Image 1 (cartoon, rainbow over the protein chains, first blue to last red):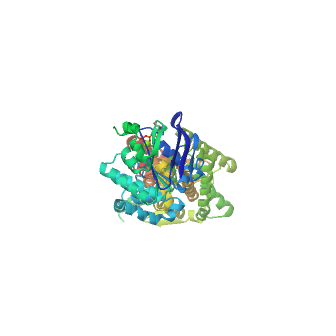
Image 2 (cartoon, each protein chain N blue to C red; image 1 turned 120 degrees about the horizontal axis):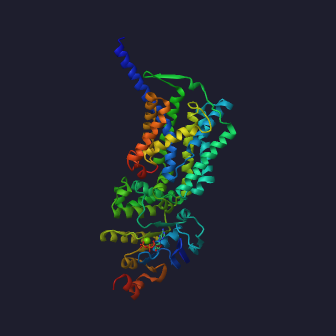
Image 3 (tube, rainbow over the protein chains, first blue to last red; image 1 turned 180 degrees about the vertical axis):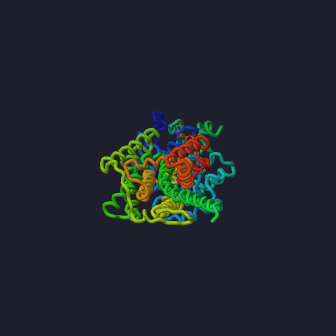
Length: 234
Length: 304
Ligand SMILES: Nc1ncnc2c1ncn2[C@@H]1O[C@H](COP(=O)(O)OP(=O)(O)OP(=O)(O)O)[C@@H](O)[C@H]1O
Ligand SMILES: [Mg+2]
């Protein structure tokens, strides 16, 4: 459904991605793992259009997105929950969620989606009038996922959604990802919790210093000796 | 009547007159400053040509009155869409290219625009002072022992109404919410599918429409000439810094403070002194409360 073909990406003279190719299949969870500064966030930024690759293509259902501006990709269904949540801190939970439904396609279904988000995260309904910046870390992450869902994604990208959360909340977020996926959402998950991510994902890839070094079935990667040594401390 | 009571009565009249003057002036200053602070709050650009758009609004009021005998109040119905369009055009032709440039480049650009507009006005309409005298500029209104002309009072009412409408727009409409979101986190806004270029275009156009309307409203109250905007734009910077950069409610309060300083300073020391008082206030704020009188509110409530 979503394909990267031979992506080279740069920040100034610094090359962050080298010839990265991968494919996210419809209805599946794809996990992208790797150490700090491996280029995981850059990969998502390339897909969202915040970083323009110097070489290569981003293709969604056969449509080349390379020349589509970032904001227009959201209307095509490419939606990202960025690293660090990036909520609008001085707006209420409700305002943040409503901002998620900005594109005409999303706005048409706004009320129904809002109901879905509140069912998924009842705590957001309780805190609807509170400023997003004053939520706890876990609530902020839920709000960020809720806001992205409001955009009616066809593929939802999550950049380290469990970063800095207590174990019980990490489990809560992984459960949510599983639920959303079971409801039919295609998901691309960037994670540092390698074991949990690979258990959840049908397909996965490992980035190392901008190179895609491994990719395959999630379970198969989990059993890979190199990966075990590098990321699971075994 | 015994002399002591007469004196007391006169004192009350003076304070009533000064108080009402402050409020009337403050409302108009608010409409001028709110466009400046809106553009700064959302786009992070200081528009040094803001006063020149005010000047263009004044000329529109003057020419409509002189050529078509059109009352400035009615000119507003034309000026608001017209200046919105001028704002869009200025954004697309000038601002768009520098919105992501360094502050220095932006300053050179808007100062250049300011000079260009002043000189265009000078070439087209000469440096002569013009006045607009509709019937309401000559119609005194007496209340609480004070006297004003109807132009001042109505200009205040309209300015305040437009300012409040702009607040409400920012606060309660989807577009207003989108503008605030863009100010708070531009990349996150893009990830929500928001076309930030369109947001900046609308922001700039709204700011220009507001200051253009203010220009039309003040055309019966002040002389119209190519650099007429300067006297207002200086005080708008004071207002905006006082209120906290980008804070619209702060701008309203800042306008009242600046108006009070001007009115009291002019009364006790003479009109020539009023700018000295603004700038003493300005310097005082920069030294003691550089984030504005209300602390960091401006940075927090960007554009609200
Ligand atoms: N805005 C930027 N400007 C310059 N260099 C950047 C920028 N963002 C990232 N980089 C560099 O690009 C490389 C890849 O960064 P990226 O953020 O994609 O890594 P990551 O895998 O997401 O890391 P993390 O796990 O820390 O989030 C790093 O070397 C980083 O320093
Ligand atoms: Mg990252």
